[in-house]
Structure formats: C-alpha cells, structure tokens
Amino acid sequence: MTDPPYTLIGTAFSTFTRTIALGLQYKKLKYSQIATKPQTRIAQEAHPFAYLPTLIIHEIDGKKVNVKLRESQAIVRFIDRVAPEPSLHVQVGSDAVMPEKMWEFVSFAASYGFPMIEHTVVKPRVKALDEGVLSEAEVQDQIKAGVVELERYLAVAESLMAPDGFVFGEQLTWADFFLFPLLADLRAVPEWRLVSDRLKRWAAQMDTLDAVKATAEGTLSVGARPLD
Image (tube, rainbow, N blue to C red; front, side, top):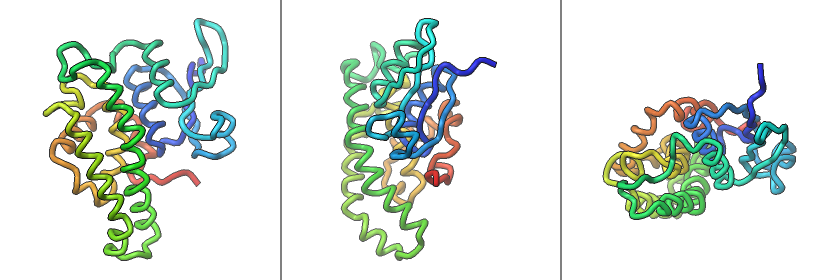
C-alpha cells in the first residue's frame, strides 16, 4: 500500500489541528496523523516553536520531498492550491459582501476566538472539573472574567454570520472549519448554555458533515483529554 502523501502533526485535541484535518477530510486528501501535544520532542522537530499543527508534504509534482509547512493559514492555502474543489471559499451571491470577509472571520476566530474561548473558559473549566476540588460557585468565580470575554466573542462572531445555514449561508467555508473546533470544545462544558440559538443551529448543521464525524475521535467534544 502506498503511504499517504501528507502527514499531519498534532493531537486531535488541538483545535487548529482539527481545522486542518477537517479540510483534508472534506477535500478527500489522504493523510496520516501523528498525535502529539505542543512542546514535545516531536512538535519541536516539526515546528520551530514546537506548536501545532504542521503538515509534512511528502511529494510535490511527483518528486519525493519532506517539506514541513507550519501555521494553519499557510497550510490552508496549500490545501486549496492542490485541491481547489470542493471549494471552501465564499462564492458570488453569498451573504458576504466580498470574499475577503471569510478571511477576516478566520482571523477573528484564530486570533481572538481561540484565547477568548479556550484559554479563559474551556481549559480552566475542564481542569476544575477533572480535579473536582473547587465547588461550582468557586469555579464560576474563577472564570467570571473569562465568561465576559467569551460572551463578547460569541456576539461578534454571530454578528458576522448569515441569519441561517453556515457562517456565510449555504456555502460551507474555511470560516466554519476554524470556528467549529472552538465551539465543539465549548459544548463540552456548562458554559455552552451561553451560546445563542443561531450558533446552536449552526453547530447542529456542522455535526451532519462527514468531515466533522471523521475528526471527532480524540477531541474534548467526545470526552477525550490531552495526551499524557
């Protein structure tokens, strides 16, 4: 059997790693995955700062190579170039004013959504749940500033979305694949109650995608925890 042309470095628990896996699955690109947390020896060998994900490209134009491509948005651009269809870009006639609005949404999710959801609410909440030491009132007090940031981000994200369907209406885009891993994690903690009906409908629609189902294993959304 021929080895897959790509290797994805990163644990399924990593939200950005899942974004890339969603794109690879959706575009039906064959790949293998090496599960590792950031700051491990494997991560350091793949990424100069030992973060996730890295996509190792084993072949370009029929020539054997082992090119390491780091940073999610760079990897996304490569995936689009080698597999332009099915498209994950805003199409003419969508709810977006211009195609670049998709990249704006992607940047907001990566630069603001990730810290405002994961760092301020999800990670401390999961840590508290796993340790079982703090009372619910103590946990809520510990993350109350984070909840304010969470609600701020959710309001902004929803304000940029179409009224129904995916982020930009009928067309699935990279915006959906950058946002989904964050909200899938949020769904695993009690603060999911703060999410609007619009975002809940969007998450339910995302759940129906084969790419989402194929990348669920090993994520917080199904009860997994980071690798030891």
